[in-house]
Image 1 (cartoon, rainbow, N blue to C red):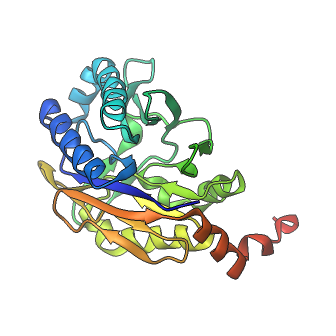
Image 2 (image 1 turned 180 degrees about the vertical axis):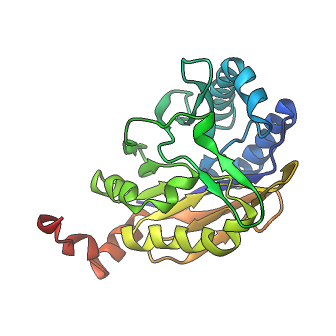
Amino acid sequence: MSDFLTAAIQITSTSNLEANFAISEEQIELASRRGAELIGLPENFAFIGDDQTRLDIAPTLSEKCSKFLVTMARRYQVVLLGGGFPVPAGDGQRTLNRAELVGRDGQLLGRYDKIHLFDVDLPDGNKYRESETIISGTCLPSVINIPGLCKVGISICYDVRFPELYRHLVNEGAELLMIPAAFTAFTGKDHWQVLLQARAIENTAYVVAPAQTGKHHYRRQSHGHAMIIDPWGTVLADAGVQEGAAIAPVDKSRVESIRNQMPSLKHRKTDLF
């Protein structure tokens, strides 16, 4: 099994849909030109704005996002993750936050609706209440086997604080964990990299984490630092705080090698839990 390149894209999304799609395509094209075969877009790649607008446009935006992912995957011949976009929940008042993974031929390989919702009052004065306008997904993510590449597990942003989700994915065979996010600047400076490395180390798996960066609207600001981390916890690529991408090789044999060197997954006392 030879290496393949993966890319975690980093952008600053706003309420301007066309601009968001344009910068997303630009970064997908650049990553594909560099040889990336598996590319991830961050959470909320198509829209970051006020809640009411998101609710109003969700029916059409969800269709646009799915079509965009299919078009981009086919055009650039990559496996593409749309890291989170609003999908109507059916009650007219809330949406799901859905990630979709699309193959080179435009076929939907898998989808996941974000389970853990960010309801937090931060010391910097910002308050987040995702549960007021977003409904939790009700199904655990499935592991997706991408032929010729690897087995991928999908999560979204706040999920990274809940290690049991990732243990489920590894139990199902995941070798690479995708964690697209719009991590706040306040929490990101202390927790983002630490959490990503923890998920990589404890599961001896690659972590690919696309990210939002910079100021979006009002007081909302994202941390940036899209990353790719190997199963030993080494940061292979960090996009910093500018729009761009973290790009690095993934080697399945390294997953196997590290799991043999550090066989902690085999040492679990599952009969006690």
